[in-house]
Image 1 (tube, rainbow, N blue to C red):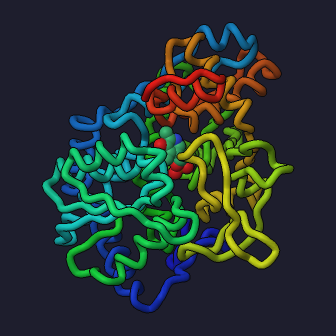
Image 2 (cartoon, rainbow, N blue to C red):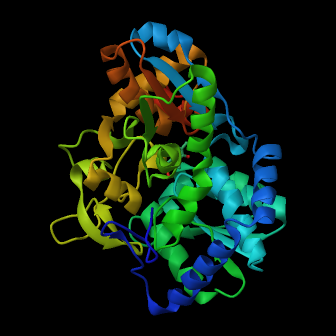
Image 3 (tube, rainbow, N blue to C red):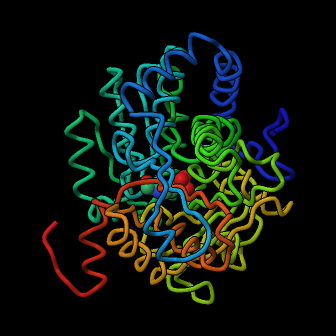
Length: 396
Ligand SMILES: *Cc1c(COP(=O)(O)O)cnc(C)c1O
């Protein structure tokens, strides 16, 4: 899908300082060498299956289907993976690649802490040194995840530049990487950043759509009509879409976080409100002001709170192959509660953005249509915040 210079249409590329060029070239060469290597693939497969619990289930949500009264709804259960989300797929893939490259040390950015925890997990598993960079604001809001990372032997570094949030943690990680490339791999958490990261992360998440295809064919004898996923940087969504891109009849829908609404400043809906720009090593769409400064973004969901989107999504948006809708906090919280009481599954608030869109479209569709929605993570981490949203204060 990507040409040799890592372009998706005009998006992507490598907008990075000279000092990082060698690192990304080395990474690209290593990835080209190992991605089809039978030993590497077998090693990754065995960790994914035996450690992370793949393949994840494709579950027919019978009560949700009956309750909404339209299309058949299936849930792709990434929430059942070890560490409770899809992020472990990419963390395992990149850490194993880094080991083959002779790297002994991992660095990673994290916002809500989910990617930091996934990286700390694989570092413990593979016996690698690990440093996670996290905005000081986020460290305070996500103290439990800071504890988890430290418990697994990772050093967590506070970043107090900018707004002290995810985008600043990414910038700090890039700076740290330039200082120490020889033994260090930057384990980037979503399908963004300079080439080859968007391609590498997409490939390590594409197990999701490979499995959906097989599982849907086995259950229904045909492909789904819709595949729906939430979009932060876009890794669980591109992983869910990838093996369907050439199937024109399968509609692909990404759900961005509208926050308090796309007509307010308190939003993180990049494709619905943003414009073309260059940031974090890539050309893509970003939430930015009239001077091209990256805008502060807001969503109830910390995992969708990123001011940009991966370049492959930008291209799928430009070509019209995928559609991107915006879901508000209110709609996501309603969906969070609806799935919990209808199916006994508490979804991550990120995933609830995708569910909210399914709740809108399923009742309008005939009963022979099939909708697959990716449940990118589980919602235990969100319970205290959701209670607070409804005016109830509970201890975390
Ligand atoms: C991090 C996260 C996301 C958003 O990241 P993507 O790269 O867009 O997938 C979505 N859901 C969960 C559960 C997450 O932890």
